[in-house]
Length: 536
Image 1 (cartoon, helix red, strand yellow):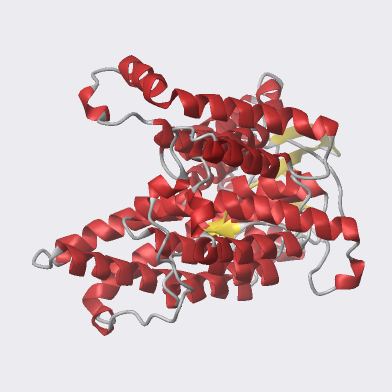
Image 2 (image 1 turned 30 degrees about the vertical axis):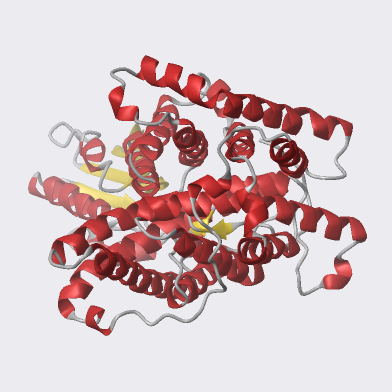
């Protein structure tokens, strides 16, 4: 992944902008705006709504996060990970209203999606106001690598839908599908190769203009004036009647308990998926740019953006790692770049729909293939053999789940696996013994918590120990109530054997948590002061 450092430029501190900054941000934003169009259209189709819904979402969310977001230059809009969640919602709505005609049912699904987007945004805003964005730090590095690699694969696989041959169901094997794709779309493959070559080699000659933008302009002109037969953006959807978004009030019939039982769970999932993808994207861009963004500000900005989008006819979304990487690697590092992308997107669609419709889909596919290559952490593959097996396992599992299932599930699985591995690796406590004035002293080393209680109990030879025993916790740490209960238990066992037990170097907090063992504690000057997590 490309690494470089840059001091974040705020849109509201315009005097910090140089002419070079402005040029880079505007040109990069223009490139992103064009790339957003087919993505928004495709994600609308996934969600089962009109392309206009995705375009409105991309504009509104992109505009608000550009102004309020926690990371300058980060691109947000309608995304596949959120659109997929809406698929299940659409199926539920269709099951509730079997008697509606196709048009009425389509409008009902739309209004369910709009209200879900509004509520999801409110949840995200609340999470940001409660400053819970910091919990993204709980995601371990192997899980972050897995997320990036999985998303890179998802970005690449998403482009294959544009290369699928007509009447794909008639082919019996994937080999036949590939052959048919080359036969029908050979010109698209040629354009894709030219686009990827342009993006790879043009920056080595000049970085005055983003290579992706050059590819779009030049190839579109060649295809248009050369009357080259290839699929264009206009073939994906009719953009001739798109207007500026206006206020839309969700149907009053949706504000019922029955409807809310469907909407609220989906809204919660949309909110969590959106936040996880946005905060992970922010972490990736932090690594690329060397400047830390604000997770809490991003949560609030995304929440406001999604709520506003739902109120103006757009679907919910989140940060887009592909477009964000395009922006960063093209030189768009300030808020002006993401603002330009959002504003130019709606201007192009509303006022220059004919120009947008003429752009070959293959150019945009080639750009996204290069984004996929640039996003994938190839260094993580090289590190696999040097990583601890547990970290390598987390990386691979998160990658696979991201591709096959869902980003939120993948990240949660990565955190759980990492937590279990951490607990397992630290579920050991060691005791060294020595004689001291006729007493046997156990010097413990390691954390005492629910995972290490068994190991703790195995250290003592109660039956064969002398009449006086000392347990020294100077190099140990009691972490939770399970640890305190284990100390109480071992104290009872020595007491039942009629042997004197002394406990050294326990924190005041730990001593308060003890019941049976409390009277057996000594009070040393160098007792530790850590806190114990207890439920007593």
